[in-house]
Image (cartoon, rainbow, N blue to C red; front, side, top):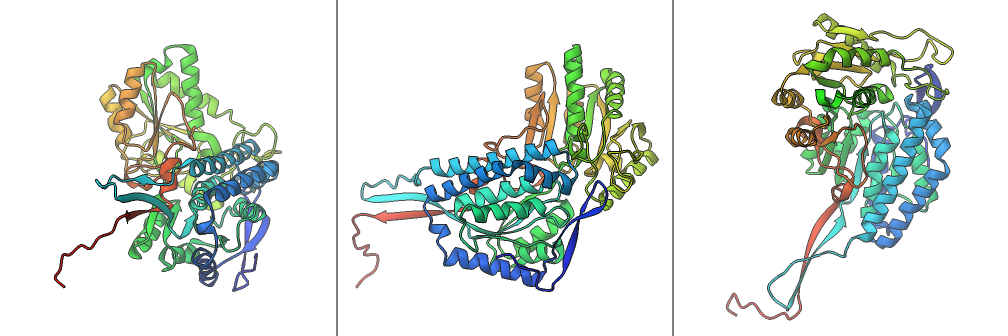
Length: 489
């Protein structure tokens, strides 16, 4: 049942390409959050979903996947206009979300009924089974709202949980559409709940709510650690994905041929500037071997200047705007601090001139390459979440590894080398949750996604992603019970 916020408040959702209003949504508060948690609690404690056969839960996830493909163009357009990304990126997101629902549908369906434990006696049947955690509070970020929602919702439902989701107040529209599809697919009332509103009070209330059993958050380090601390104080199960500052290590041998050089440059552009750099796994730190640095960075900057900026729905546009004025201001501040600390501007570093596909009121910023960077710079240490690529150099393999690991984050990274043994050796030494070799950005639903250091706690995707939403229960059955006779009488 869709309803207005208890206080009657609404929020404007803006189009970042021109700052006009896309839609009004309810601005929920603590009262709305409590009502959503209560609905999820009733659905879990009294409803049928947690006890629904695995085959039925799996079938529902597949129906959702089919509905996502039915509405592919509509959802891609919503995602493009709401986040600023290109329409083609929006289509890719819908396909990835579809794959996530189908993956978890298959995974839960193909699992056995439990893990048998040898009790050392033929008269004892001992088994470990999985059960749903309960009510899950899910908080998703503004950069990939639909994709991140699917990484949480699909395994939560596959495991038999109920949930309350709070999408970012900046980009809630595709998540609203997804919840509508869940209802259309036949999900029972109360299982899926959404509250649109700000982190304070909605996110904080979800983190501290006594009737929430699991708290899953994807977003920034500061807000995530605060919310996580509130969740831990209530002894909830938690999963936090808090971003990254990701190295892209390029060895000279990767550039020994023209094809290798072109590929490495192309991948560096892809790593740093897809979705205007608003990606937690963005390769924002280029760590390049000194001997090829001049040629590589010159070509990189030349091609970065040719990236076509504009409204994501326009043909030929390669990068859209930043998501908000706040994010634009943040990016400008990072570039200013880098230049003040001695970085060399190779391209970008400013808002572009308006054009027919780039309204003057939009939150656009040119792809920026900063050369001559070092670890003491703020722009190198902190997650900028914008179209900023910093360049550092190395001369030895050990130095490359040391630079790549010299970060408080540990989400993702990449190694480019024509020497397979070296690439695998370096990948093994990197303290990052995902390491790509001679590639950047692909992910697989079957593979686990998580990080080291301050990049978070827990795993998403893969079998571990499903386990995040389950508890283990040991059932010990004595087939021939007898008196214990420990005590007299």
